[in-house]
Structure formats: structure tokens, C-alpha cells
Image: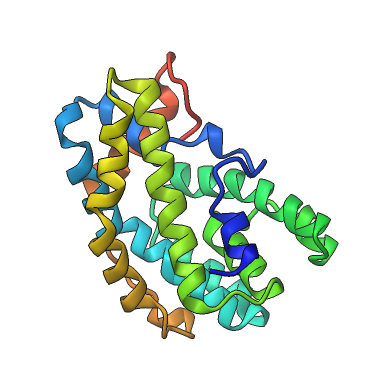
Length: 211
């Protein structure tokens, strides 16, 4: 992978990733057993993460169509709570991008979701489509793994095991989205129960993560 792709995949990147649980906290608060976290990751990779990876890849392919991509992503993300959380997470990426030469107008936008922000950075830094998709998948998986250690009494080696265990799923996502170039071709895979949990998340008075 290129140095810019490795930079984006680094959990220490100051984009606010520590505020995100990859939807794990809402799931656990709703009663999902800790033993199901790896299955939860697989479900996310087959649904929302696949949509986000495709969105980033399509944005990277043609940044001039970013408004169409945002509209297509919004249509595939029915919960306004989930959309707002993604747009909040995007601000850190856009701020980083502007510092690295991305057009400053993006720093003034508040309606750009995280996968579009990643796609803009991928285009700006000349990442290829496969790198872009892998960055999205890796970031989401590591968000869950990192959050799990704060939310449940787990052995850290278990979270590494999850990451290794879903490697084939990540490869499948990358293979499925890397050739996409049009917003019309974004997948529309959904996980309604997970979205309901995420939608309810802001109503919890005791939570560690924004989303």
C-alpha cells in the first residue's frame, strides 16, 4: 500500500476516530451478546461497510460528481442519526485533507459523510480503488476492535483474532466495489435492526462513543 493509504489506515490519525465504536456500542446497549461481536463485524462488512467502501471508491473515481454520490449514499442510509454521525466523523478527515492541500471549501461543508471524505482524500493523494476500499474496511473493523476493549472485558488478542478472521470478508468487499465508478451502482445492502439500534443510540444517557 502507498504511504498515504497507510496514513489513512493508522488509528492514531487525529480524525476523531476515538469517538466512534463502529456501531458496536449501540448493539451492546441493545442487548447483543459480546460473543456475537465477530458475527456483528461480518454483518457490517456485508451491509453498511460495503456501501461505505463503494461510496469512497466512486468518489475517488470522479470527485466532480460528489454531490450525486452524497445523494446516493443518503438514499442508502435511511436514519438521519446515522447520517449525521457519519458527517461529524467526516470533519476530521476533511480538516486533515485541507491541511494536506485539499481545497479549503471542503472544510466548510457539514453534509459530507465519512466515506465521501475518504474518497476525496484518496483522489487527492492518488490512492487506487483497492487501497481506498481497504482503508474504509480496515478503519471500520479497527473501530469495532478498539471500542470492544472499552465496552467489554476482553483479552486484546481476541480483537486481533476478529480482524484476522474477517480478512476474507474484507477481500470480498474490495473485489465487489473496486471497479465501481458511478453513484447509480452503489450497493443498497442494509441491516435494519442495526440501524434501529444506531438510531436509538443518542437517547442513551450513559454512553462512551458518539456512534
